[in-house]
Amino acid sequence: MTIRKLMKFPVHHPCTMILVANLIWGASAPITKITLVEISPSTFLFLRMFMGTIILLPFAWAYRVKMTMHEQLFIFLSGFFGVFLNIILFYGGMPAIPSINAPMIGAIGPLFL
Image (cartoon, rainbow, N blue to C red; front, side, top):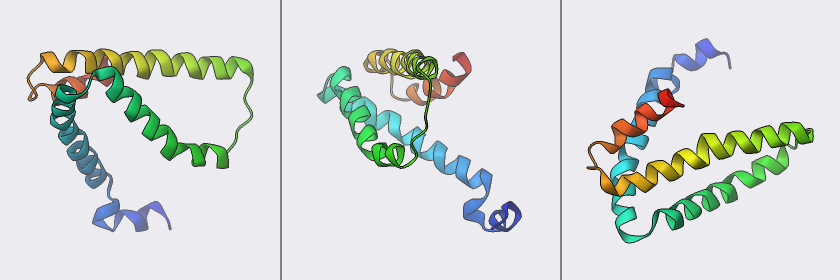
């Protein structure tokens, strides 16, 4: 199917997809704030990353790509500083802010990166 044919369906329209993504991400901040009251941020992050790894691992194994050691190091460092460090700082500060501000801070995060 071509892009033009897909865009005729409202579900496949880019604006609809952005709206759905914003609804999901906007709803995740209050749920995360409630969760962080019950468990520590490090435990929450570990469980979140572990479940994501379990879900994505079959896809990674299906599409193996040969990479040099330099490329693997670059991907690891990018993931560490761009994702891991960002998430630890975000969820470490989440208990200290009102839940209404959490989605705004989450939305501004990519601009700072």
